[in-house]
Image (cartoon, rainbow, N blue to C red; front, top):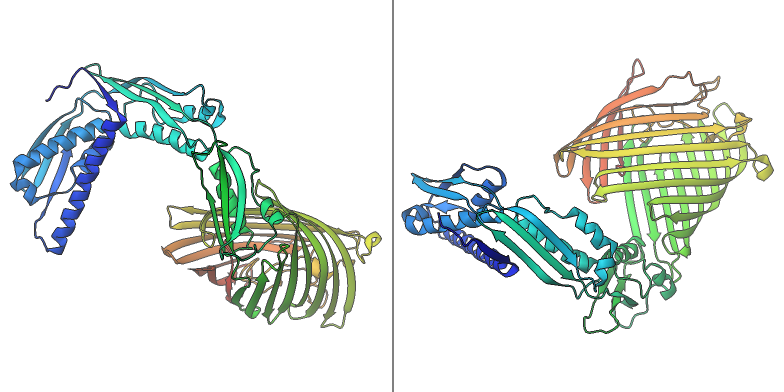
Length: 602
């Protein structure tokens, strides 16, 4: 075994040279293999077997040696030199500086027997920030010292040593220290004691600050699509504030999430030559596709075919107003809704929504309900992800029953809601996430209403994916209406269960108390839940099975209904398309029902 000097210095330059040499070897091998494929080289690959060591050391030796061929066996003397060099470099890279190796060839196999010997242990690790630099007082750099990938007493690992430097440099770039540099980056390895001392000193220099934000249209000479005062509110920072790359990302996301623009480019261009150390932010915007149209379709045994159409114009004018019209048509339900958005204190996070709508609905084929609404909502989005909704809406309902009963009622409903949606992965096909909402509305004869009521609703959704193929979805909804005279509560405010968004296997809104003639009349309480398992066959197809349970009831003694079934999921570019066949297992002679619809997982 070759003996090394007792003390030597490993610098950034020496490690870089090894890395470059290794990269050139890899590039050469890749090129050589590619040429062999083109020329249909018939050389057989040689098996490499590394013995005596396991884990990262073994893996690293295999990676450094790479693929061997019969040509390597035929020129064994040259190959042996390369094998010794690769094994030594691979061992040293993970902290074994005194490893020993023997090489032999047997037929189409090369066997490397390695004895690792004692590793190099870190006896001292010092990472300091220059006292004159701003990073010495930056809490993010202080916190980094507690999470370094190498610590005193551990094996000296080249990759983790480089990771320390990368972490510091990346943090410096993320927090605006663009003039940062290493004043000391030195590792002293002492043999035969097999110890290492690491000394690092970083001079961050002056931290840069946000400069002026410049907005421009992607087509030169065109006016900005949104007023400058509104655009400036979308920036999550002020001029002169310390720079953070995360805020540039947040700014870009806010511009995209506003849905005002079809093209967004945000650039921060630091200039080390400037004396004021301010970074101008250049934003380029485009809004050349003002109209958005969505078309949806579905089918269920109980309601037949269903079509939905939505048209929206996210940016109606330079004041940031928006408009959206949605409609749905099926055999039992027809509706149209109008929504006009106006920025309030913030274009995205605080808006007013003027709402209007009309719905015609046939419940259980014996009750026809017509409902018109008009109202206003204030939607506020919090940094925590929660969204609040303060609303007041007027609702007029008229109904006709097959037994001749009819009526009309008006409600003025102040309300408050809070909700949150969190997802990971694709927006159209998240791998995990959760959703929860809570809503309260009330009406009183003292506030221009024909009924006295307090309506409470809450719901939860949970989605998890395991081992990339197994997906579990949970759903739960509850609701309750408190009223001194429940008979006066309009039918459209009451609770019903059944259908593809409730308990599958039962007709749409068929689970509810009934009157003496057998017609559904709605309930004061609602409970429903679902457990669904889906198995991924391909990236776009899944098989699913589910169990739903729930009911709408007045008396707590009422039992819950259970539905179960199987389904297929197609993950389309616009979201999941679901085809289910379900049975109401709580019934003695239940026929299967088909549910076909599009909808998000949460």
